[in-house]
Image (cartoon, rainbow over the protein chains, first blue to last red):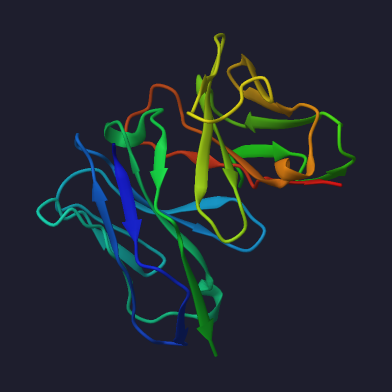
Length: 115
Length: 117
């Protein structure tokens, strides 16, 4: 079945460092890809998404590009802040555009940014 | 603002009690909602798909008699943990997507932390 694999955490960075969180997927169809962020004690918030190959999702300085050839959707940010400390989840949907389709999540990567 | 409201956010109760968790889509209709369970430091595990006006679809290994799901309207789904025991303690999260809109992602509630004593 479909699956998502993320790099293991925790990831600890200093403020203003460059961030990469790797995400690869396996899917039989043509999924949509998402990054969600979870702050302590809260639910998930959508960070960015991409629905087709070579799409780049971006939000709040974070970016990820849908790479069909490498089945990857790595999350990047050029300069992290302490407020970015959270758990990041890569996910795919089983239907184009996640139109009511269930999400399959990676295991999550905890990011800790030190001042 | 929040588009999916989940209530309560935290509940502590005695073993053997049944607990109901509500998930509401605030400004859109959702024929399908999803219920997830999350253990500490772990990912979200899909428990079931809640379908408005019909029976929920449960994932393998999830006891449907233990976790009762009702989706009686286009904006409300409820999860009832029946006769809860300490092993049911967890963080439960619901999500909903806008019915009929393509390329719209799931919106998540803020979760319910359930602690069974």
